[in-house]
Image 1 (cartoon, one colour):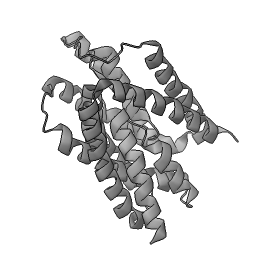
Image 2: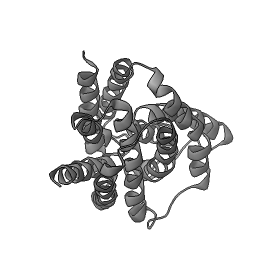
Image 3: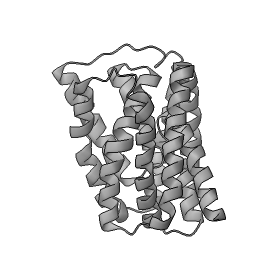
Length: 252
């Protein structure tokens, strides 16, 4: 019982922060699963399945606000899902420390980039909504999808930044796309793939799913209430902390 309570609390905290920042739930949740005794592959598959509930919880709140562009939704699905499946299939073939070292450096770079661009993402200034813009946007999401399928520690943060940088979204709007599309569709595809090729700790999922669901809803509520500035600051903190955590895990 204590183990399940601990899993719920960690999941709730991790997914509330993730829902507010647009990613990073794996920063707390995945290491805890490994610390409690799960091998990396099983912990990854279990975390990936639980993270689908993050998208469901956030979508309950975000879908009420509307404002989604079907073109962007389409490229996030069609452009990235092949990358998610590809990444989930190759992750077990890549040394985890090399993957985490590279991802950690890139994640820290995201936070630094956001900090040195103080006005980035504070206003919605949509751009690149042409055929060429959608194609390049889809290509970027395909590459991020590979990361999402293989390593879940903070790859949603890359999607959030790509939507802000390439399509000119504000932080709150970008996070809403990330959580609804990535949380449900991308993580769903990755969860199915990993469940087919790896074992899953099914007995731990109820506590993790409940924490993810509630955390997703709570984070979305805070983001909509407080606006882009708080979301931007949370994003910057989460990217740097997530990156440092990945670098530490990559050490021998």
